[in-house]
Amino acid sequence: MGSYYQSDNYYSHSSTSKTIVSRLYKLARRWGVRNKHKIIRSVQPKGRVLDVGCGTGEFLAYLMSRGYLVDGVEPNQTAREQAIANHGIQVVANTDQIPGYEQFQVITLWHVLEHVPDLRATLKKIFTQLASDGTLLIAVPDRGSWDAKHYGTFWAAWDVPRHFYHFRQTDIQALLREHGFLLVATKRMWMDAFYIAILSEGYSGASRPVALIKGLMVGAWSNLASMLSGGPTSSSLYVARKAKA
Image 1 (cartoon, rainbow, N blue to C red):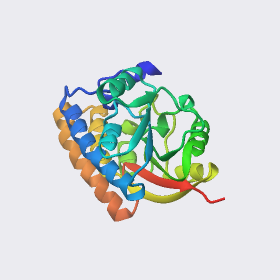
Image 2: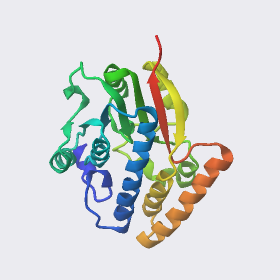
Image 3: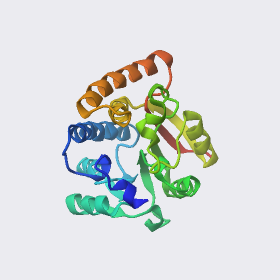
Image 4: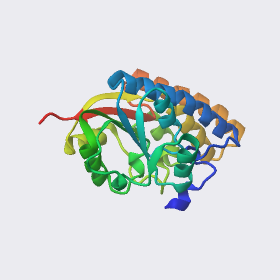
């Protein structure tokens, strides 16, 4: 599977900005890092954070600069080495390498759960390592979104074979209940619609300039459709805690 992540279109494992889309991704990532911090600060103003699938470590580096203690998990060797070298972050290759006694106030999976081969083993491990008063944040593409229906087989968030699973909100709700978590909130992720739409236009055959223009327009319409219908955006964020015994 590792070879499928060595792609010019797989920007989360790269620090370069060779194309317009990659530059837009980096700009969106900088905005996203600050927005993620705001979300975490609102539920856990301090403490220890584990980011599963931390990529090249920009998010954890930002949290560290804001006073959090941080650890990361990143299977991709190139991205993991960049995170360690560039930011001095403790990053391991998989969750099994984190001692069972370690406890975190926040555990995050930003577009990661769809990549893991064994969903249930991953969630069981996370449950044991989340502190009793901790917060779990899971962001995944939403196959119930307007743009998933609009693009059909060209929807970029299918991303086979890197994505093993494709979720609706009811799927994540059931998984959280099954593994002892209480869903606190479900949030829309507005920026994802633009990125997914640009990629989807490219997959459907549009040239890069056309994909950029049409993707921005379709992304805006997708978000508007979500607001008007009450349905999900291109991706959804789930905020959960351990259920009380």
